[in-house]
Length: 68
Image (cartoon, rainbow, N blue to C red; front, side, top):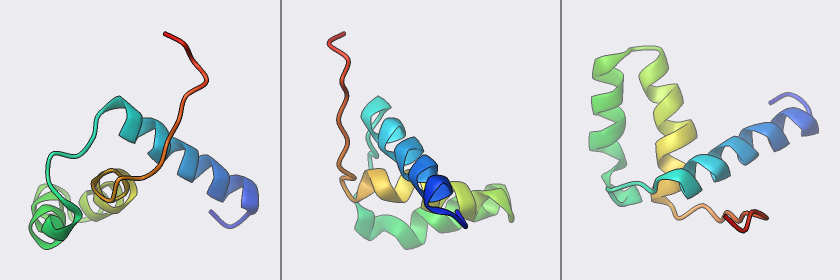
């Protein structure tokens, strides 16, 4: 994340994750969901929640070049 290439990789990862499966809770549910993720793992819960769940809940734009 400290370089443009690192940021591009992280945002690509979030976009791919959102295409694979959207969030079932709206972004307004972040206090409950991030809290639940934190309860399951003090370190990784918030990291993965903000990195993977939050972008999908916010309808992160994504696209695919694959026709399958």
